[in-house]
Image 1 (cartoon, rainbow, N blue to C red):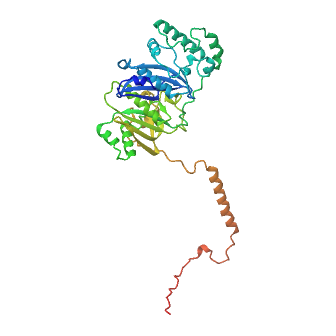
Image 2 (tube, rainbow, N blue to C red):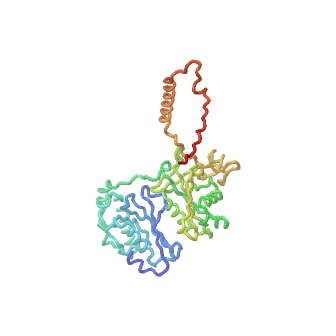
Image 3 (cartoon, one colour):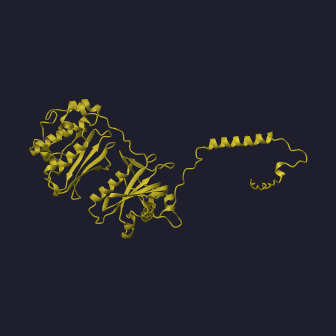
Length: 411
């Protein structure tokens, strides 16, 4: 990042490399470099990252109007190169504004820009035909706007590339999506919630029991109100990052909300609900009200994002992801929860039963019982018969006489 950031004024700029949850990308995960100035959103750089981390595809670069012409875009792009120091980078086709900016930008590692290298080196990651079309578009934009655009670095700039692109197109390999599996993986989802002032003070009071505070929050939002719209990830940190994104781009709400995450166990032993799998997360589609085992909750205060409160439920608590549309709620959900996710009258909070110590040991237990019965039968056969007229041991009344008291002799 050396260079570009030196030309920024002391405006309190901070950069944040975080998850970017987006429908596109296939097996490539979304990442975002977000720029904040004085804690307020100033711009972002969105990219897709290959599963092996060795290729980055730039999707978009944006700076808010009030922060333009202050080299903020260059700082974010420098940060991207620093975050992926060995990866190929494809900048794609540029817009008119991007064309003018690129002409001024001093690229830190032009040898990793796929537009500057032959397709034989990077065709495994990027479709050569697509890259050729992007280079042609950029060449047109450069001529139209009368800029150089670092054309001397571009591989075979101005020459026909169609034949070479077609030659290496078969080398391109699109990876398969292998995201989380709700039947096997524990998942984390989040929501922002504005708590009443009194409850807010209790929930963020670290001197109180964490599980008790978590129970109060769950009662407040409803046991059946886990968010269906939330991206469900495999890490708690990713769930918290989603909530910060919501807050940064929420220009309507004037109230700061508590950031709350839910930790649920795999959805085993039930029909798998409809869901869309992405590279690092999934989202439930048309949720009818999905029963889950809630194993924990964590939350952060909007005033102290660096402080995380966490509670573990042992055993887990029965809860549910709310239906996407109330009219589509399942009969099981309607029998237990109201339309707003509260427990219905007569319904009580349930906790999952712990695993039985006998589960899976049926054959072992049956074999042990057979051996015990055989041993009892064998002992009964080997016992000598009682003499005629002689009471059996069971008929005896045994009397124990106390031992005689002994006195210590004095010699």
